[in-house]
Amino acid sequence: MESGALIWQRAGELIATAIDDAVTLRPLPPPPLLFDDMPVFEPDAEALRQRALGLHAADRAGFERLIAEAVEQRCPDHVKRAIDEERALEKWMSTSADLLASDATRGRLNEWLSAALDPAVPDAERWHIAIALLVGLARTEPAVLAGDGAHIVESIVIAAPPGRWSTRAVRGPESLDWRPGDAVDHAGPESHADGTFAAVWLLDALSDSPAHAETLAEWFEAFAVRPHLHAPLRYIERLIESAAEHPSIGAAAASALPHLMSTAMLQARPLAHILISHDEPAVRRRLLEMTPSILPSDLHLAIELIDAGLEDSDGDVRVLATSALNGLDLWDEQAFMARCPSIAGHPDPRVRRRFGQTGLRSCLAIDPTDECGVLTKMWLDDDETLRARLEVFMMELASTDADAFEMQLERIRVSDPAGLDRLNAAIEASDTDRFEAS
Image 1 (cartoon, rainbow, N blue to C red):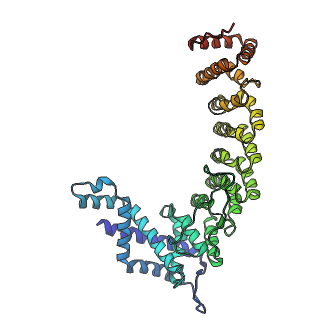
Image 2 (cartoon, rainbow, N blue to C red):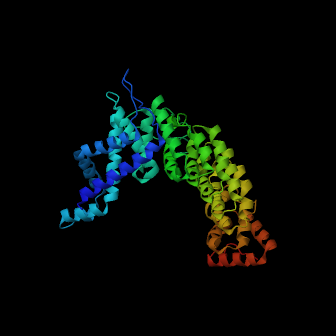
Image 3 (cartoon, one colour):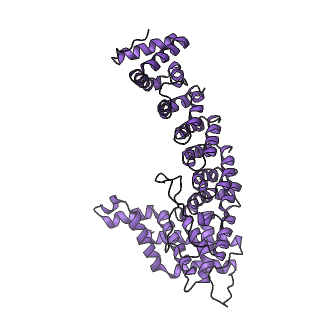
């Protein structure tokens, strides 16, 4: 079969399958935009299916344009450089028929939804077809909407054609380029009442089964930086309700948490407590990865998450908590130093190594004479992975503060004479003859 015909057939199958699934959810939400005094009636299931396929079949030229756009974006260079480019392109299109059909179907959805949400001449018939296709694809073929689903939902909320408006992610204290004097602008497009109703209906239709959790997780993560969607869609409430049950949504909630701390702190804190006690280690790992970004917004919560992470049963979570501790010294030196001795003697060697790689330098910058004994404790631990790094710190101490270095030697001598021998060997190897451990 010719590649164009194969792609056409696959796209028709995608549309038919999606519509067949969507009609089981009837009644569909009404169009957000209507002409005054003109009632709109939702077609029955069979009529909706026939109109969708008929609309698809009637615009073959438009479909070919969508395919051409998809080929232009996706065609690999080796096909364009082929000696017989036409033959190579035909072969590639045949093998990529499913991918191109997905792109074209997504293009169809955007076109029909744009017509339905045209503020000048809204098309109610295309609305019913578009919303049915959207929910059907999200439930049966979510890969078709990958990357675009959240934008389409946002378009419905504000009742604007997709792709013809733009918003920007809101920056807050969690952003790397944030400055304390910057203002947080939470303003965005105004939500439309009927559009919001349709978007809520769509999210509810996906929330009825764990099979759709991955799709919701992708959308929820994108909604995090769109605060104008949070209240209309009950965004944080949905995260709290779903995060504990679905690990994918829990991970998305963890990614969203730093943004939520700058827009809805009181609601975000209960979500953080749910995530840190989640049964799935991957969710707790993601949360600890995001903890450094929470520090500027809520120091107390960040410390609470770090402490919980250090006591976690999962080794990766403990290591990530140790990494997160490294940023605490910028916000609360006392809290940072209070945790250094226990981490230096932590029973998990991976935690000790990570602290030696990330936090020990900050610890010694605050306590250059090592009065808390962290450097001594780690030296006596004699971890081969950290030995070279600890030798550097010892040599720095010897060259900057002779009295502190003598105290260090005495602590090592009292605790473990073998540790003193290792230090002697390190001094000799570094050709440092100003100090002699004896």
